[in-house]
Length: 285
Image (cartoon, rainbow, N blue to C red; front, top):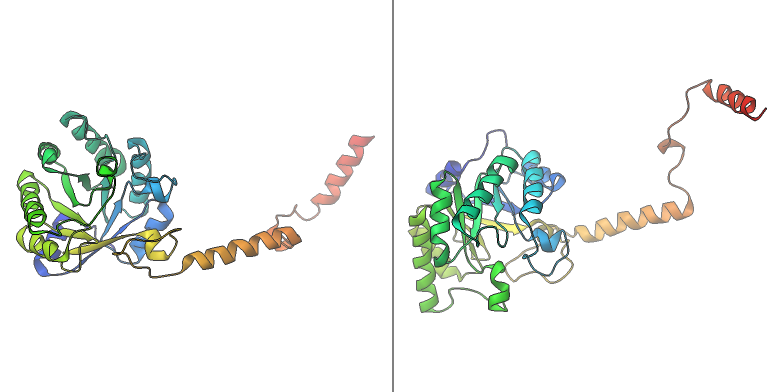
């Protein structure tokens, strides 16, 4: 895309009924491909702790780590709307910490949206970051950062009472200043009501097709995830097979000493080899 995608563009897409394609990815090389493919948004999610670093949850992601990978993604896709994920404990320890850390994403990493996994207890954080002049994406529904408290992540909004609370929470997030909502693992019917009710873009992560946009993790899209993927995910490729084939071929070439060959090697300039041999001979004598 030549024209930068802003939060205003996402709002316009919602108003005009155009779907928003978002991808969660974490590095320069992949982000360039996502940009070339025509997506509007990249979320640099704290799921990088699992996908990139191999942890079993998102909790080990640190601010410094998230800043580095967000900056890399922004360098690769400067015209996309880049959303940065506030990691665990980056906003839980007070409003001043939340505003400061959100500001670091904007100043140092080029983020346009600050994503915060939020409950009603975080409304003051949403408001403070928004009041500081930053666009906030409130992440509601399933919240992976709550895994130590909940013990297990399950679909949200599946009863009338839970659905009512989630719809009410979405409205409260917007009233507090949220410029967008990420709705994860939520019953489709509830996601549809929220999308129709709030004036800001609603991005679905396993919340059905009726939201304003969709997001998937890049490794799931490419078929690279090592284990089972969530019910709501869909693979669009089997890159794991192709990558393994390529690496196997490389390993076999090295073992057979067929790589590198002369075509893959640099050479001394014409006439310089004889000169070098003479210099070495003189060194021996």
